[in-house]
Image (cartoon, helix red, strand yellow):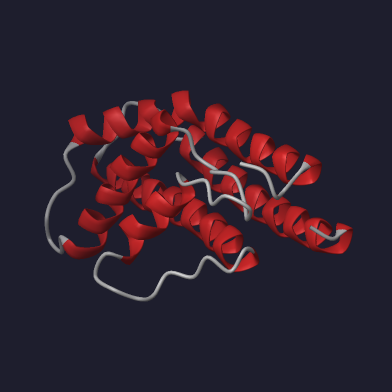
Length: 157
């Protein structure tokens, strides 16, 4: 990878990580004793948290030309692609445990976007809230490890 290609990738990912951390700060500011309005706000913020990670995945996929065609399984395919090492191209971004968390958030995102009029389950939101708080640092480490690997030897797996 040319140094300017790596610099562009790193800059794009760092900008997206700022957005992810901004969304995360909004999640952290919500207190665990939620009323109905706060539950809706938490649902919206969890939705945005996943979407901000998905935008990061798109940056990586586009940078390495790992395009995923639009389909009804686009979101799951993109997440799976980030778990995959592509020999001679790029390392995997996500370890299994981080991919599992993001898959749960992907499923919630789908529900949140398509379940018009449905009430959010406070119990499920508490679990997602806790999982995000516990898993955020590990997700950030995945990006750091990915960038370090690309910096050292992007052609190895």
